[in-house]
Length: 130
Image 1: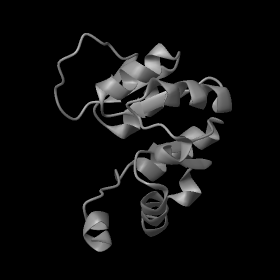
Image 2: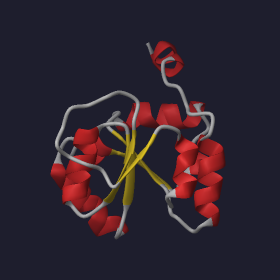
Image 3: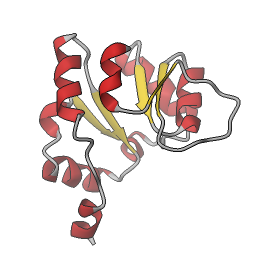
Image 4: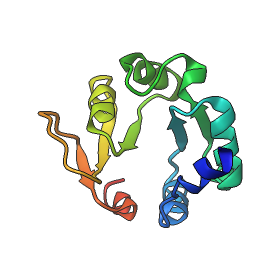
């Protein structure tokens, strides 16, 4: 099961370039995932992501998933002002209500009245926003 799961997780080919840019700009980078901690640790290790992020957070370890507004309140307490990038508008709406700046990496059309602060199609478009 683990090997199949890992095969199904694609890492954006521009991720390393964009992360390097954001680090040069002084942004601390935190990866949030709803995967259980053991699975997230495995993914991070096998996909060589640990070096990219200052912190990796398995949201269940905090006691909240990304569909819970308390997660974003807790993140703001721990990290201060935040910019969140996600491909799900519901996640961005909850984060935006907590005061986070929101960036939607649009992969599919979603019907909602929520308007994120920024919309991108490709990860390297973050360089024009941040």
